[in-house]
Length: 65
Image 1: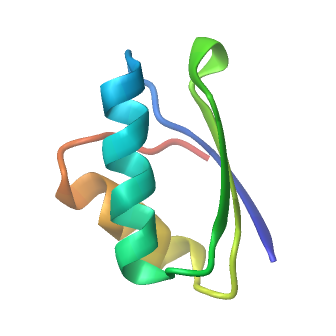
Image 2: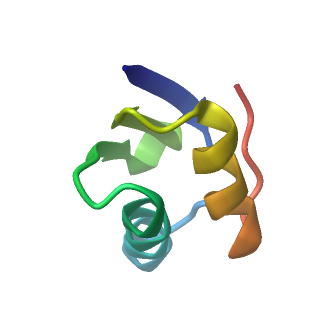
């Protein structure tokens, strides 16, 4: 399933890499697309939105729908 979210405090490529790594800890097969200028994250995964959000917030980032 495709999940869409905004991570407002993602500001650089390093942030995007950390978020990608966090998502991969929950679902190593997830397909992730990050648009840094718009702070938009798309994840194609079988894992719940809640699990993805928890992985991102656990490393210090905010998540908005």
